[in-house]
Length: 459
Image (cartoon, rainbow, N blue to C red; front, side):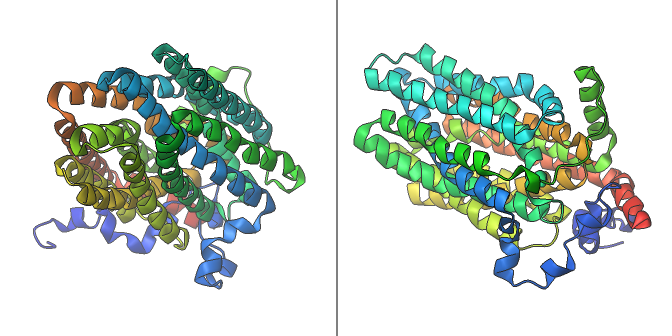
């Protein structure tokens, strides 16, 4: 016995397996590439943290996305503020979030099939152009004074359609820009970029809304797409790490079935699916939760709303930079991040004081990225090249595609039971999800480890 836990069970717990962390995430087709290279190990901490940026194509992508995502976060808070100004309805806010993410729910799995078929850079150019057009139309409608709620609903659907096809393609495109050796670092840097934008965009957006109104935030977001489109056009296609294309079937449904079959029959992938499905549905509803906390719990305004969102981004950015310098993603980080996320979401539900809420959101951001980046890296490293688009599409379905359910549920619960009760319930459900994942891990430890055993045998 180890304490009060049976020895056989204790050996299966994630914190007992740290010594095998790096091989645990490997897959038969990745072999030695799942571990950091010797050269990386000899680098200084700073150079190791940013090593993926040595790839020119990735540098262009990173710079463009950093600017564009800041604009996207400005639009996120501006859209929520616009809906509340037009309706003062919690349900309407939940509805627009549901509509924005509904196309992801419907189309993202088939978008993964497309991602495994087409040149990814060209496809991302199309989706980014569509998203830019959506932002500019929204800005024009608000500026003209003719904006109505149904306009917001329709344009939210258009943005969701662009995101549904762009997100799995972008996820799968990362490895083509940096290669497998730098993949883990690039995933962490992407998370840092996303959350750095979450830090800058909402804070700037809050002031922009206070100064000129939501129309200014929408216009700036439309302009922010120019750098990312320019960066994609400047890439050197000859420097992309494009894998040899596996012959695809003529039937996209069969291709989708192949990807799903791999995900649900591979224990290390299914573990991530369980965790992300529950936490993604009930925890990742910030676009609904934060404006409700600002208006109905803290009774603040647009500037405070910007800082609430920025607090999550700052914590996530800190966490991402810490993860970028690490050599492996561990199950301990996965479970600890998920557990802390659920607990801190409950703490946010209890707080009615702005400084304390900001602190909780900062810590929530740290836990958020620790969980999400580890889950993303685990899937990327455990998936063969020819299936990566489809498996990452499943990941995006669970993380973002579940938001129509979670976002709408948050709005309805907040309307019926109160904002704090709704958030507390969702935090508790996240903890239930972590418990379910831990139970699966303990009962299927040998299956999760099987791919690592095969990889070591073939190394």
